[in-house]
Amino acid sequence: MFNDIGTMELLVLVVLAVLVFGPDKLPKVIQDVARFIRKIRDFSENAKQDIRSELGPDFKDFDFEDLNPKNFIRKQLTENDDFKDLHELRSSFDLRKEINEVTDAVTGRETGSSVPAVVNGSGTPDLLKKRDRPEPGERPPFDSDAT
Figure 1: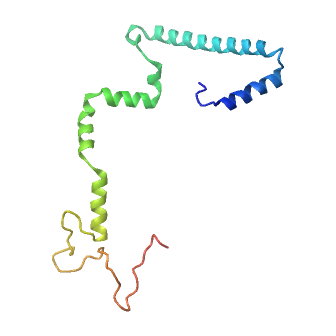
Figure 2 (figure 1 turned 45 degrees about the vertical axis):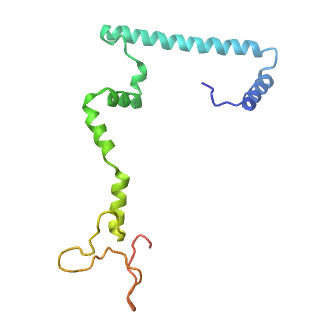
Figure 3 (figure 1 turned 30 degrees about the vertical axis):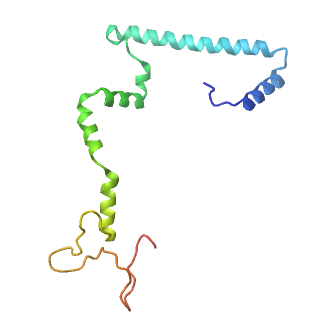
């Protein structure tokens, strides 16, 4: 519950508790807080047992952690055989490689496969291919992302 509290923070809380409640009332306050936490836990366990008994014997191994949407989805994806093909497809598809190939084709860089310099067979140059320098007197291309 308090895994992320450091020693200095704990020491500050103890000193603050001594200052607020006083050294003579502090043990009584700690007992009251511990009793309250115990009652809350007992109430929670009783509520869980009541829900399990109302659901019947089919749900005797029902785990309340499964009600968390992340846990439910994780459990369904790992236990369901219908998603095995999805895992195989996902492992065979390399999205980063595909994106790099598309980026290389747009920027005009050569990859392992040949990138055509012509869009169609008419001999029209590929307008997406990057040129090193603009022609003399030619305006630079309009870049809507840069404006």
